[in-house]
Length: 387
Image (cartoon, rainbow, N blue to C red):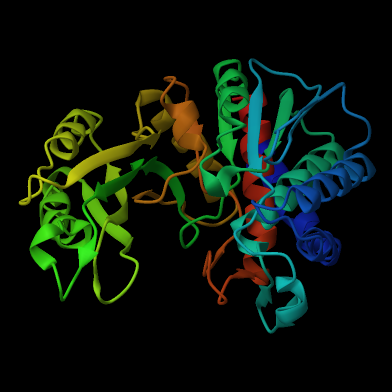
């Protein structure tokens, strides 16, 4: 075994030893709720995370907290290191779970499963990244300069944090996104995402006494739904989903208003123009009904390039030294990693927890896999510092 490989193996042993403390830290973060839509809890949660970070890593060399307005603030912390470049650890601390969920669904450890709201997506990733840095320090292994960015609005599209993420990503030589893994595989590709609202405005009238005077927004928009979903092109990686449809005021009223919310995922950036044109061309059968389309492309696609492949091979070498094999996968879900990858910077995503059930009551982290995930991140950092 080479000296470098022996150092990686030592990281795994330390991560196994520290597992009880890792789980205690994860419990602390999960029990402090941070719903994306609750500014009060987000601010308090980030205060606690920052205090915990200083307990575990000491004072950072620099610290900036950007106000998020109505959304969660963005915290950037820098820690010195050595090597050829800076690594950005990209994490979000908001969750999809509303205030009070922790009372209905408390942290539970059952065999190999650690469950609780937001544990898998993605508070375990934050904890694992911090313990990876601690392990490197304990062993005296080189670590690159690291910047940690924590944002509180990822689950709602990162409206406040996006410029900070893009600036930090542009200045980093490598970005590691500590989002959950996919069955232990890292995510080197993600689809881009567009979020659109289609609204119809018709003419209300009495459905029994004067139906011809009305122009139903519900009927018109329902007729357009097949045209909207026909914009999907699975062979090109494009999917379209109408996830919410609403309209009308009463059973006996010809509907004056209707709307639907549309989710579009793309792998090919060129699909943006085609989908935009298709949505703009929507024409109702009843010309008296007006159609308006609003929304935007929230995330560009994350497609791996040569630099990402190079870094993946570095991570795969670490995995082999840990006695495993690292796979890579492309997924339909988007993350903040999409924003950095669109800048042409190398990104490895899905380096967080192993487990399953994001955004569901089955959300859980696999306890037995946690030391490996900690060691994988630590090993990748030290290999990046000294390839």
